[in-house]
Image (cartoon, rainbow, N blue to C red; front, side, top):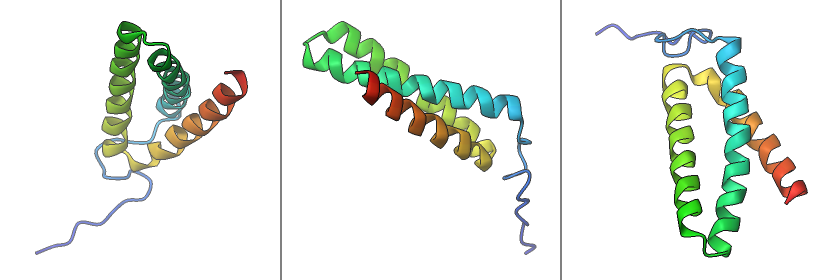
Amino acid sequence: MAQKKFNVVQGSGKEQFKLFTAFILFILFFISDFVSSLYVIFIGRDLATKAAIASAVLTGLSLIGYHKFQRQPWYIIPIILGVLLGTYISVKLF
């Protein structure tokens, strides 16, 4: 049985790495950390509807990131950077 080679540039081979997509993922996960901070605030204030909406947004953003990461593993870098910066700034603001 022939072994499939892993192409570092193209990841799993299903999708090429695109800088624009990486930028969009960075922004989405930057925003997701603000939503995550709001979620914690909403839970603390007993705002169930707002917390539920924030939870749904977080789940949707996570699924987008998972889908893109699964098709191109190098997208993990902008995702991690977006989360890092988003957490840092949201903690400083809230």
